[in-house]
Image 1 (cartoon, rainbow, N blue to C red):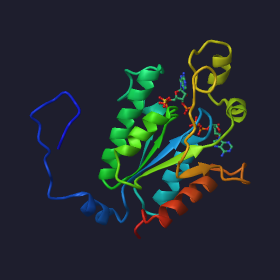
Image 2: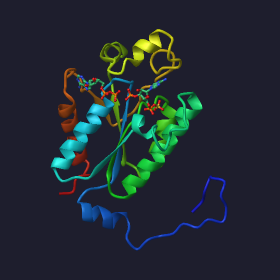
Image 3: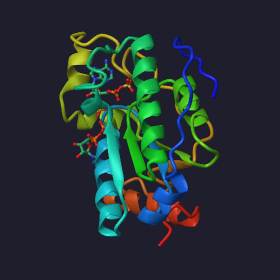
Length: 207
Ligand SMILES: Nc1ncnc2c1ncn2[C@@H]1O[C@H](COP(=O)(O)OS(=O)(=O)O)[C@@H](OP(=O)(O)O)[C@H]1O
Ligand SMILES: Nc1ncnc2c1ncn2[C@@H]1O[C@H](COP(=O)(O)OP(=O)(O)O)[C@@H](O)[C@H]1O
């Protein structure tokens, strides 16, 4: 297998147990649910509701939450553009591994740049990267402000805050936009059911 990295003389090792075997065992298909949107748009709430609802149906998920990953794997990264890109690249690669394990991997990250999200999509087989856009206006996110970060950003105490003085590029062609039209007040649990219907329709929940 080719590599774009710096290491040379490396050879891909295959195991006798493959993705199909793992999927059969788990009665589900591995995939990545990529939840993108502004801070405060409800990414984490949806991720948790999804995890809970799928767990109740006997389905295995794992959440990669931007805030949490920045406490460990990505603790060396800031919020400047190239570090956000590296943050998303690493999370995309980890998500790919989880999907290969047969797990429904839920990434909830701002992922503000279209190019970085598209690069993550390219890592996965067709259909297995399911982009979910939390289409919540900045005014609503700012009014929620559960961590008080918008207030700090407006006061100039946080520089380069997404939506205030750093860009967010909404998806152009994503699989799901939430909340759905005409259902602006949908709860995270209701939105989770919309996502689960999509997974069922596309054959990701095998039994
Ligand atoms: N400058 C700046 N811009 C945006 N967000 C900031 C910033 N500084 C700290 N935070 C907090 O970090 C959380 C976002 O981390 P992510 O890894 O998802 O961001 S990114 O995808 O790399 O843009 C984000 O969490 P969520 O509110 O859950 O989205 C914020 O709490
Ligand atoms: N569908 C929703 N309707 C109303 N409030 C919500 C909804 N989803 C999340 N919230 C609230 O909005 C705030 C931000 O949600 P959170 O999931 O932390 O967003 P994010 O992960 O995108 O920053 C929280 O206080 C949460 O309780």
